[in-house]
Image (cartoon, rainbow, N blue to C red):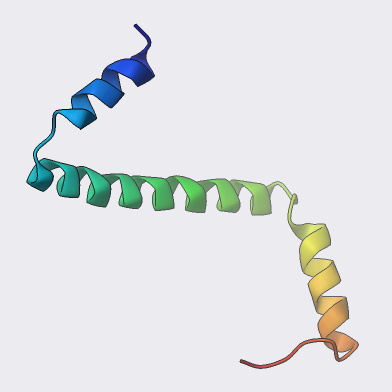
Length: 66
């Protein structure tokens, strides 16, 4: 059995309180992982072209306040 299937079975056996705690933990874990990936991408210059395009669009008057 794969790790994922084992984890799925374990999750299915959780109480509602345990499932709520898992959701909270995973949400925080996922957000932290996403933030780290964005940071690494930014440091590696992977977001430079997007930032440049956004700045040019703003300077051309194609942005709005919300």
